[in-house]
Length: 436
Image (cartoon, rainbow, N blue to C red):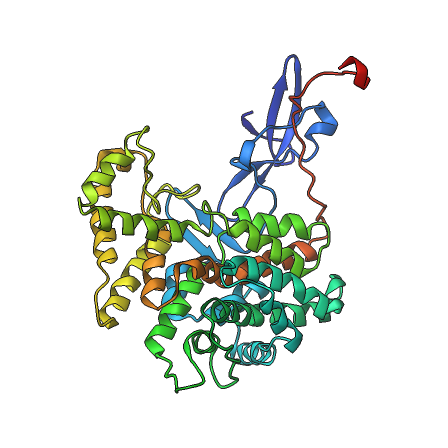
């Protein structure tokens, strides 16, 4: 299907099947990305495309995030991730993703005030936590609690009500941290700590997580800065599994709470948001083994070894994940503040060095991704392993909201309905029980 330019200047591709030829439109993105528009393919030809896991299929047009995996580029609304990580805050980035531009002072103040005003949970929701055992995974609680918000705010069910949509966005983004912190407190048997209106978004979360009624808690501004950084790096990542899930559920005009709850469930998987837990488990296993990283680098190259280097490689990036570069520097800074160094950070660095000097990994472009160092930082902050994916979910919430909002505002949105190629048995007939 080579590209060609028609007489009116439009770019087209040609599709040839047997002795028939069709012209297919070519769509060009802002960054010169080219896509073959097959929206009318089945109607014109009777054929559909088969693309398992959608590895070569763009499901939508979006103005939110640009990602170039070959060159290691990530931009939110056109702004490079390294600039935002250095200069911005999570709340400012959330506004940028959701509303399409960096807020001015008045806009940021108003948005922050909304987040402060909506940070509390309805008191009845506290009783829900009583029904969960102490062993309940925080992601299960997070997903259920977010979904339950739709019963406390039924007005959010009207997805076409723009005024109500603004309040729903603020409620969800603000309450995510409260739900998460309460989940943590439930798991360790400590009393819930209510949010404080005089604290920033990240400082408020840290206070709800780690303060106790028996003694004062001093928020460390350096840690607040690191948490802002981590959440910014996770805020959006184009059409990944969980974001696509949010869009797919939302395409039925499901409310924001229901759509995000589905995205949380998608994120929970170890191949997506749960990867940083897997990285930490791997580093701990290497430490316990005592043989050094080289042994495990060699094991990863053996197909029958059953060992896989977690935190290396990415479905999209074929270069060093730009987020991993930023987070590696942050890991060093956090460790300098800790009273005792974490041996897992040294193992991680040695493992990275061993892998990136090995032709096997270099040729396959298996570089560290954002999950490789994020778990080490969360561990240093005192956040337990089973909360790592919850932290990912808090960070990803602005991106999920932005994609849901963009889709709802797009008049061309249709309910998702992929096709399939049937491979089951051919036509058969019902066999009575006495003849089977």
